[in-house]
Length: 202
Image 1 (spheres, rainbow, N blue to C red):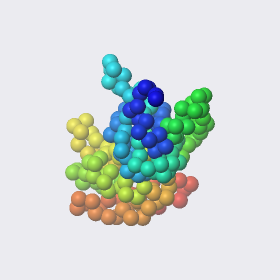
Image 2 (image 1 turned 180 degrees about the vertical axis):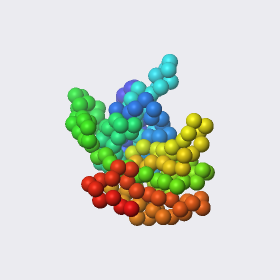
Image 3 (image 1 turned 45 degrees about the vertical axis):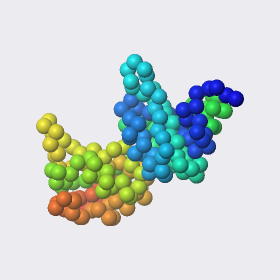
Image 4 (image 1 turned 90 degrees about the horizontal axis):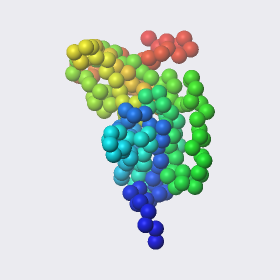
């Protein structure tokens, strides 16, 4: 009989610990990101009682242990706002005591996955917003940050935006499928935001 807190104990084997979260992360964003690995039952970022801001970590409960294992594999070290997040089983985290520093190598310049798989999307219609970009591009693979539309001082679209994928398979797929396609009546361009090794796709 354990009388301890039980808010994420429903099924530890399908619950993940997510750490090193930037202060701008929200429950909704973590949900959106992790949903790409499988159906989610609950997301809980413990909040500071006074400021109501989260404390840099949280818990995500998946529908099955397989989905949780998959998410831990593909989401660990993905960068949100430049910070590589730490994702592992909540049950493993409780045993490992001092395991908190695991996986911080690769946090330097150019470390971690997902560096460079960023796409520039041009010639966007003024009606295209971040939600439209997310719905259009998230089907090619997991995004490591919400899509960005460049905006002027009046919050009007400048006609281009950026999509950041977790891997190059997804970004290559997006270019192959979306470059030259019509989005809200305008033919968009899709290319790498930073040209890699000089092989510029025109």
